[in-house]
Image (cartoon, rainbow, N blue to C red; front, side, top):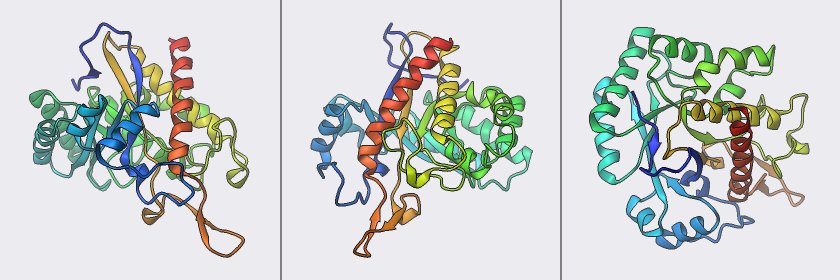
Length: 297
């Protein structure tokens, strides 16, 4: 079994908001982020309400009194233990992993997943497999089948890859969510990214409704709230005192084609949103979803 994150306390299971530091890369000039670095950046993030970061420096996180998670890749079964040991030695609490290329057959897929479970147990360090395009979990149906073959698998849910990549609302979305319940039940870490059915990352405004420039026939904000709530309820269903679920906004930059740019009146290109400000909105949306999940349980 890949363990839940746990701080050793007797506190009720809870949500923690981290920030994937990719969110701060190449922010636009209009961003409210104060352009800090090092210990000052960690202190500022803590003051803003973030309880940890992903892909930062664990020592700086400890100095600021916040948590630290890492990430990596597993392309062969031999990679898993090496990655777990590396991330643990750096001082991270857990790691999220991209696994394979998506071209593996079921036997190859299972070998990779079993190696991650074995490494997580042996090293006593949780590795959560990310639902991500171009990996073994790029397809929701294959991921569901994986949970049936290997129930011990645990995920980092980045649902933008399913929502956009498989155009989830095209058809009976409620039926798809019911089919995806084995995935939701196994989420122990979440990446916050919200998109619509054509773009994987869009401006969400204040988080209450679709913004005009991303508006269409689907209420994608409502849909992402539902997926996050289902995953949080899946965590809560078996969580023990001291367990916590991380949601880390991962709102990425234009240079890797996530952040969109549009022409300003003077013809220059302007990124559609301040990704740091959006991360603060994501945090509020996540907290609201967690309260909803507690009510469902």
